Length: 256
Image 1 (tube, rainbow, N blue to C red):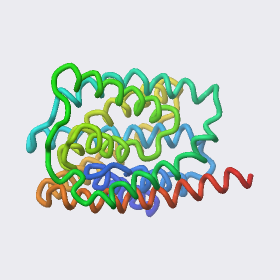
Image 2: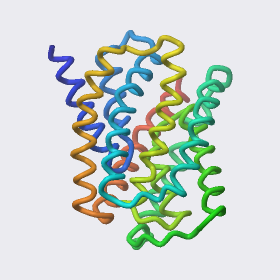
Image 3: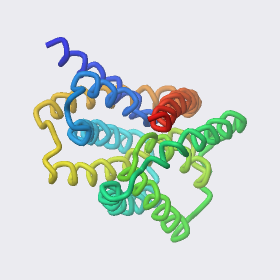
């Protein structure tokens, strides 16, 4: 019973963080691995995806109701991400992803340093692309992020927000709203693969999904109420934690 309560709290917090800046996996996945140390990693990943798609989906719907979502930049990215996430999940069964563990901390450091020094980054919503230029750029970004999410995954939501801010001219709140739609597509695609492979604890996943939905709705309202400045600060915190976690994972992989 204590384990279930622990996982429910972790799912709520993951939903809250993920709704604002992404990175909820930092909380939810370690919680699952700590409670089920002998369970197959793929099963825990699949269970997390089942909970996550409900949380991210509810956040996406809530954003769509409360802020203006840039569908022209979000929809093409979501479609491309859905296709390539499945391809990434297929690829990881055939190609080792160890090199990604080594490279990721350095990429995250660059993202954090750039965001910290650009004080006005994401403070104003001023889209840089329009029409087909925006759609094609979004599709290309979605394809890359989708493949990455299926192949490796950590920090996908945070990367999406940064890319929407840096290369599309969105503010942090608008970027977070668009990123949720792409995240839903990635999660659904990966969940299809895990479900087909039988790697999902359905009852536990649905229970955690309910907690994720509650956390996501709370996080969405928190982001909208406090605006882009708050999202930017939490983004930097989450990216910093991602740097620490991925650095530790990379070192342990190298030592082993």
